[in-house]
Image: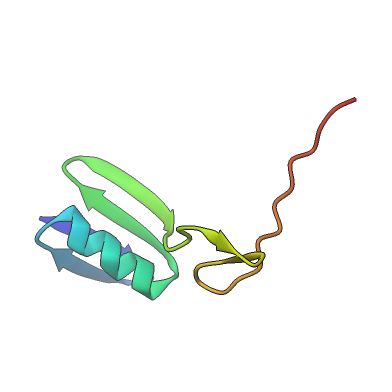
Length: 67
């Protein structure tokens, strides 16, 4: 079983694929507990198109190069 903690609630899923799809659709910070591992983050940013992430937020990260 896979468990996702979101705020004060815990959700249960049969496999990691289902848990990740749900987390991507939610678009908020979650903690996933799977097989002794803990995965944390805001999931759903699969790519950049026209300067925006897939969830609609602007992509603002820039690599700083040293001279």
